[in-house]
Amino acid sequence: MNINDIKCLAEVMKKNGISKLEFEDGQIKLHLERNVEYETATSSVEVRREEFFEVEEKESEDRNISEVKAPLVGVFYAAKAPGEPPYVEVGDKVSKGDTLCLIEAMKIMNEIQSDVDGTIEEICVTNGQIVEFGQVLFKIRKN
Image (cartoon, rainbow, N blue to C red; front, side):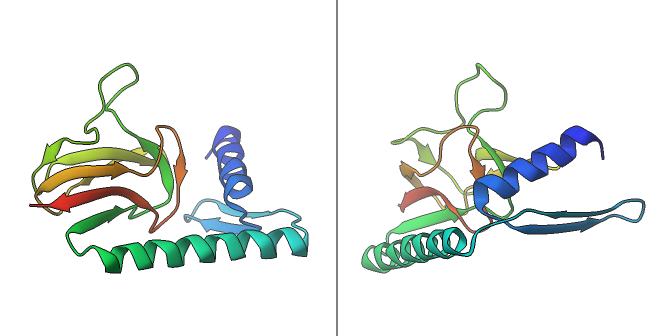
């Protein structure tokens, strides 16, 4: 782990409102903590809670929509490399096992695949965006 990795972790903490992070891998033990005012932390949690309940309500309304959620925290990439076309776009038909995107975590590119056959209804994040565990990435209308 180098200073750039630590700066990246600090930026992820700041963007996602995380106040404390601990990491250990045998050789390195890292403890990052940042000051967060109580009111700021409370209001960001309330917004996230409201967003979560909105997603749950929409999900229950339309059973033909499958949500692909981030299985880990990382950076979302729509394409294999900069300048290349995205894996999928709204309206594209996908099959179970098709690659939808990449999520980079700790310098490892993780392919995210469709678990259903269907049509891309919505792409819920943008290229280069940091995503959280469980965040909805895609909505796919099942065939």
